[in-house]
Length: 408
Picture 1 (cartoon, rainbow, N blue to C red):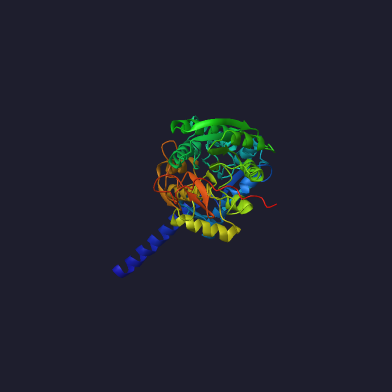
Picture 2: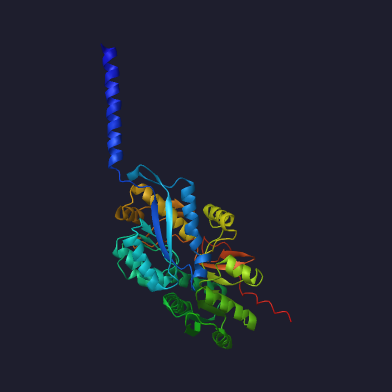
């Protein structure tokens, strides 16, 4: 009797399990991909910045995720490939905000990625928060964002708040006595200009000049000449790539040298900056950042992946930050087991995950704090981290060697 009953019970159990599994599968909403939208400058003045700093990292991450079958989402019981949907904001903030709303309201994308630039990020963060969409900050950062209550915004990149005191500390260490500060007349420039000056003064460094310049300017030589006439040890500029390239090129052309030469945005790019002017020419130039292949095993792996895919090195300010933030984001989705913005947001705000740069977490204000470095300096072709402390990869080079003299 037992021999007949047992097979019957087993058959019933298998059938019941199959019915439950089928019912669960039917209850799961249909989903075959994760669509992420991004309104970013593919043309206009900022397009060059996107191309060298930030833009390719998002593409590489999507490719890497899909190479591994996608992101596993428990709610759907499978891995979902990622699709990146981009619109060109033409380097215009108004266009960016309209396109971001289009992605959210019309295209109904699952997530959004950030635009390029501080002022653009400032606007995008408020829109994303309005619609309860997570926005992981990319290229950009502003103290003004801290004044707003934006629970869905996560600040990734370091900016003036931590870089200004680090730079002042380095200047004090190497013996800088006086400085000239110029800055682009927008949110990025104003915040950096206003942040650097008080930190310099706290370190006993005399600020002999502080002046702004308008975005799009074609000649910065008057400011360079004025700074030189004041006899300052250090020259600091808060600029974007167009200004950074112009300042360097005109300094070389005019033979204007300073013992320390710092530009916020531009030196970090080996492709645009180092390789345009030359390894020997940029020796000793400082810039915002910073990391390099020595910063962590994951950093070395990222450099190798990036070079293999794009044929050039990544930028040595944001690339490792963005890459690691995306790794953190993916792990948060997998832990949440859903694509629900609120649930993923909560996981992101409270979880530490291992990433390419090491442990990655956000503070109570949702600001990433485990920075691999604040200030970099070109030394023999490597963008060395020169912050005081354990993350320093080389001591600062001071004074900066003079620009090579033009051949007659």
